[in-house]
Image (cartoon, rainbow, N blue to C red; front, top):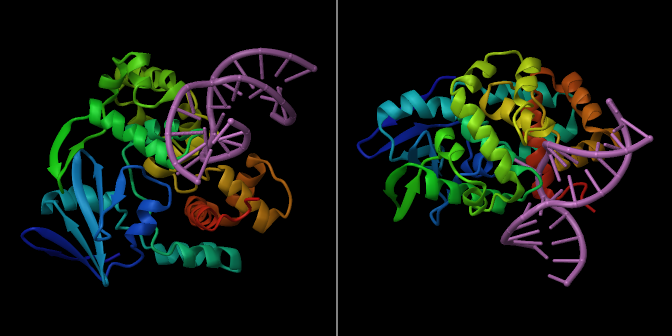
Amino acid sequence: MKLDIDYKKDKIILKNAKDFIPRHIFECGQCFRWNENQDSSFTGVAHNRVISVQKLDKDIIIENSTREDFENIWIKYFDLGTDYGIIKNKISQDDEVMQKAIEFGKGIRILRQEPWETLVSFIISANNNIPRIKKTIELLAGAYGEYLGEFHGEKRYGFPTARVLSQLSIEELKACNLGYRAAYIQKTASMLDMEPTELDEIARLDIVNCKKNLLKYQGVGPKVAHCVLFFCMGKMQAFPVDVWVKRVMEYFYFHREASPKEIQEFAWEKFGKYAGYAQQYLFYYARELGIGKG
DNA sequence: CCCCAGGCAGTTA
DNA sequence: TAACTGCCTGGG
């Protein structure tokens, strides 16, 4: 996909950005550290950097990034090399449900997030709700992440490293609202502090072996593993089946109860290598509209 | 106050 | 391998 980028002194403008709507990207459930400001821009932290993103007419305005960071980090993070038009066409062929889901979340892009942060964040997400997940992560970052300075009047912090988290007591972790997940985080942090390159090595494996390796971390089951596969390891056929996806798939495709395994196999058959994108459109559609609930 | 939330681990059969 | 059960905690 060809990018039309205008580098100004204090901001970067991505012109005529296709398939890029900040609200869809940051509120479709894939990330936890982006928050909307009063002017409808979003501020987030990733890669120990703080930026804001705003859509004005057809342009995307990026603040607080250098040209170097934009080229080296943010283009990949925002998946700007991917043409979502092709993906949308493929998965919505002869599928009116998917057509509606895509229309609803047409500005979604899948962020390429950092493996360690993604792993921890989705361990925290289990049996939890999004406001609380976000609060927990901010508590962890505020207490144990690198201080990145102030931005828009707020102190900002990076995501804590495995080394730092591995050295905390269960009590200290619980003080960040982790609850019973504190032990999972401590254990996983210890394992990855010993083998810092392990996640990168795992990411190079095929999806089956990649998943198998992720499941050995405490607090990682099938759903969390698929989230990690999809959101940070480039396995775009991963298909996390959470309660919302289960509900929406049963409601629109099965017209009956269906097991997660059954749903995932159906999705691979139907959506192939783009299954993960299909999952994300369905999840956002279902959750925003409350489809299948009650 | 009760219910539940983007599941998981541990235990049974 | 499938079916159960308990779980921190704070929004709704």
